[in-house]
Picture (cartoon, rainbow, N blue to C red):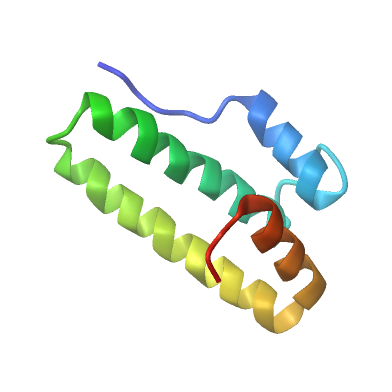
Length: 93
């Protein structure tokens, strides 16, 4: 059985790239980056191996909605961080 977890290396690299420091994983921009990594992994790798994983699809929908809420928060409160995250991650917004 394959289970998914985020290794500390990509998390800390995302935190350093988007949040200013390696330990700053609570920043909304860092959370969007981490969630985007998880979404991309699920779409590209997990669902290719496990096509019938319906519970995984529900989890994917939850991740997408959480990212959407975080992006709307950034858009309202921190415009510069929002623009930077959307441009770097290549999100359609």
